[in-house]
Length: 72
Image 1: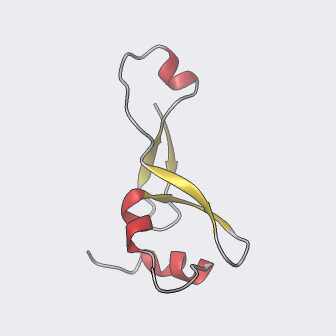
Image 2: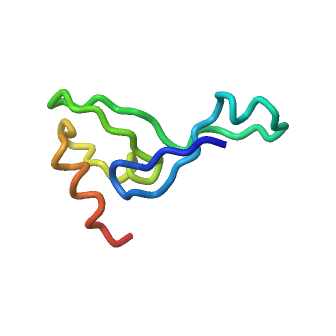
């Protein structure tokens, strides 16, 4: 199993596929995705952090930085 830290909360997120899954019969999905934001920055975010991003405007790096301050 391969993991990568979420840029929002820092939690290790499972990355599906790759050599780590070759010898495993366990089939599970990736827990996040890489997003390119309106300001041109790229961030890997877990599903929970993606849900916490603002819907009413284009997302920027400042929004990702604010995710580690949330308490939900």
